[in-house]
Amino acid sequence: MIRAVLVLNTQGKPRLSKFYEYQPVEKQQQLIRNVFAVLCSRPEHVSNFVDAESFFGPDARLVYKHFATLYFVFIFDSSENELAMLDLIQVLVETMDKCFRNVCELDVVFNYSKIHTILDEIIFGGQVLETSSTEVLKAIEEISKCSLSPLVFNMVLLFCIIMVNKKALRSGKLVTRDFSLSIKAQPFFYADEMI
Image (cartoon, rainbow, N blue to C red; front, side, top):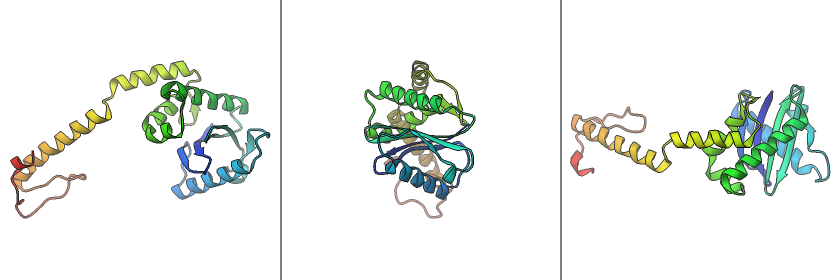
């Protein structure tokens, strides 16, 4: 089983972290720091396979690949093959390259949800689902056809909030993000002036 997938930059900042076993946030941050400490202390000409038992517990292995300014890291147990995990990193990077036309650190930062969708198509619940980047890309295209663009989604959400607040202002209740704030006093403007 795959325990975690990490993408770190060369300064140690996590750009993507997905843990498939529950870890408290503090523990996740400590594990990321430990992984980066191991990665940055290794020379370039050594193996990409590292024993991770000291910080991930018994039977844990770590495989990584360094591309430009990013480290792609998979942590897994003995039920997974090390070479297969190295190949899976390659599949992830190839899929991201095809999606973003030469993926870079900024693509990972600004397309966070798409990167997670790609990862979820390849690995789900710590199990490998798909190893073909073309199949993953087909699934991503189908998902993007079904979803609203972020701009359209935000416009629809804003419209709904305005309409709900318009009705709420007439009744003396103002709807906020948590939809629970009610006001006692009358608003100092009319609902029609909001639009």
